[in-house]
Length: 151
Image (cartoon, rainbow, N blue to C red):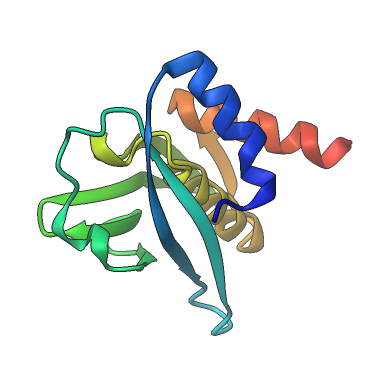
């Protein structure tokens, strides 16, 4: 059964994009390194091209956001060949450059990039690091969240 708050979105999506399929009962677990807090986000994955095969782990219901400090990225591994990630680079003087976001094609338009972005923004703000954002997707998400914070 669809969550009531998703129905208007799905109707608008169908009007704009045409047919879609829904992958039910998936969740993302956000793990915070600094305080053992975990938050589950339920979502319905909307896949525009239903004929594309999903990664084998899509039947698994849990994806975990990991922060790899050494490789300077936030990522979700769906399977060995499919990873969604945000890459960054420390510039010194408490500055960090967020420069690339990537989501496997079959997981685009599911909200995964947004969840990764929000986790990265929150982490750098909590650690009092100034973010310099060159990735256009992250620029858009940062602007949107700042506008939402004002309202």
